Length: 246
Length: 246
Image (cartoon, rainbow over all chains, first blue to last red; front, top):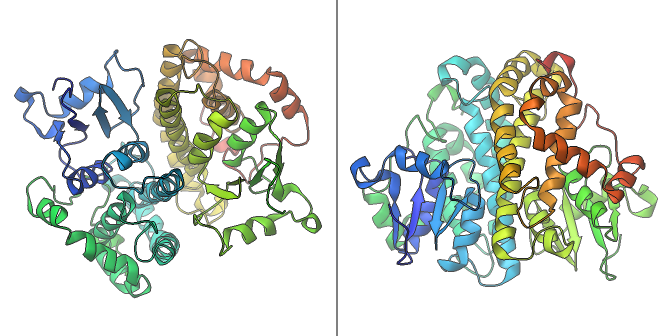
């Protein structure tokens, strides 16, 4: 893909998983933004994993990226999903337009990102380069602690944030953090359906927010489209029934 | 402690470890900032862990924090070390004063923060609430992969960033990211001395930066003072010889 000279955003993320890129996709979709999910284009149209690798290795970038997701905007390339959403938030109208709200949204999203590492490590507690099957006893042990201790700790925090914000993460209105909390609940519902069902009565605001977000017209259209990749066992949220210690 | 009405910064972080709070301490120290490390004061002067807990549970905060470090500044409380340093950077003169540099510094620091999770999980791959001794076989397995794969991947990235920046993380000059990379190298030198010695020839700029930062007058004074807590086996970087697979 050539430079987005027309104000279009270009997202570079693994084309076969939701992963961390999904938090960016949801924001772009909810805002109805003009964007291309570059790596989902065919290789002969400049897409595929090759497009990500080529951008990662580019010698021309002013800011050296470590890993996808990458966002190209106004000729610059940003990495790190928390930073990308901090950058996009005001541009997409997905955060109230004052510094205090922006920083609080960022703080909440950083905690979502911390939680995602813990979700990921339930199936990969030993190493990202190993298969799940090669770290299964460790994954079982970690998942037990995740379900009993970490899941309630994080969901309890997010629920208190929603209580403080009157049903949304920020008091000032809907934000990309609400989209992120939707994705967290959707992902947990896929990966840990029994464990989530057992505790979700404690998190009525998270449950309600998940439904509210799913019903937003642009999100509903996105979720029904083939742009929304299905959850699967290559991403962040994976359903291994033996880890779902309900 | 009462409100910092005099422009003083208040840091709230565990008083017995360097941990993630150390990245904030180094920035405040290097800038010669007026700050109080609140929890290191005696309890009868408003300090101790009790001060952290009381702030974490405060009903008056506009922005709900999840965990320390917390920074109180101008009556507001910020959590998440990447956000705290993004906020402090320009105020302390520890990042070039343009949006592009600020965002790149933030992007680099977010990747440092990701690396710190992996460092931590070498000794706690199963659960933070368990003792190291209760997850030792898993820690050995994770550390082997850390030393062989993850350490070179992250250090290689940081080294390339220093190459691009002409010896510092940002081309525009010294920044809090340089302080963070010093701390990463110091921590690895404590926790994994053999593994680091074996590979450090590949990272001449990181080695040089560590020495340069240690020699900065305010940092040298800090490191020699009792304000600098020693590394120990309660923090992020822990020296367990059996994990140091040189």
